[in-house]
Image 1: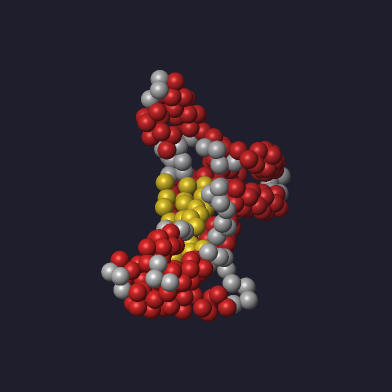
Image 2: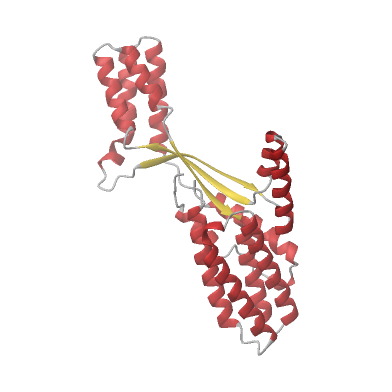
Length: 294
């Protein structure tokens, strides 16, 4: 499991997913829908910037391989020189990166259900596996996810230039098959990382923000309703396995929600507690997001 923290994406998602104009007038369902929409849009807007020089270098390397298949050593050498030239400035930098992004995608899948629905699904998966219905179990298990996936494919700067130089040497030595083999490996060796952003945690964040706004304006019953909905999203996140490695933090957030709930029902001095809860949830999400990078 490889980890890559996409700071530009996560920075916008960790704070709030931004739906606060007239947020108090939104239903729980509308808040959840807004969280998914805004979370996906933020991820798309903040995708990892692709490095054009790396993309061009790959194109020239492909051209070199084509030239080699035609036994055109001269053109192959020129294309390799172009490929290396595209990376020259990056390679000469003092703090040259280890990976150069050449492709980036954002995908979203949403599980619309409660923690009880998750438990029922898991029970069905176990039954199918007991009956040796592996493929049916796999399909059902794949439906038990609710997340935004940000996938980045990168060129490994540590090994790629050396491979080009080695291929050039083989061409110079008239070892064209070895040169082809090296280029083929270079064109198939990429670093692929996916950062998983659990949707229930984004939903919980927006629901808590709406609850805080309602509480501040003295709308206690409505505030409690949205707070309950936020806790339900946290329960769903746990049932789906997104917070299994952070159980202590999860429990402390539940305890804090209970404190906020009691304060709303009492003297309604919950504003500072809400601020603490928001900050704790933000830290919690940051930890979960990094754990779920793969």
